[in-house]
Length: 134
Image (cartoon, rainbow, N blue to C red):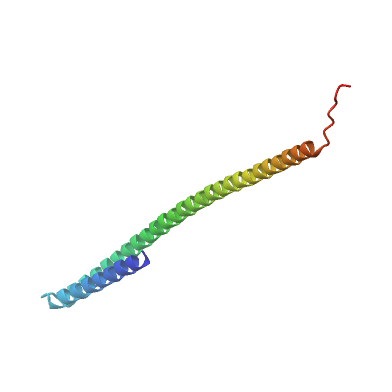
C-alpha cells in the first residue's frame, strides 16, 4: 500500500511540474506586452501554488483514509486471530479434560477389576468346611 501512495504522489508531482513548465513556456512565447506577461506569470504562479496546495491536501486526506482503513483492518485481523486462539484454547482444554476423564475411568476400572480378582482368589483359596451329618 505504501508503494501505491509513493507512486501516486510521484506521478502527481511530475504532472504539476510539467503543467507549470508548459504554462510558463506558453506565456513566454505568447505575443503580449511585458506588463501582461508579468501579470499572466503571476496568475499562473498563483494557480500552480493553489493546485499544489489542493493536491497536497488531497494526498493528505487519502493518506489519512488509507491509515484509518489499514488500522481498522489490522484491528479486525487481530480480533479474528484472538477469537481463533481462544477457540483453540477452549478446544484444547476440552480435549485435555476428556483425556484426563478417560484416564481416570480406566484407572478406576482397572482397580475395580483388580479388587474383584483379589476377592475371588481369596474366596477360592479359603478353606472349605464341609459339614457332614453324623
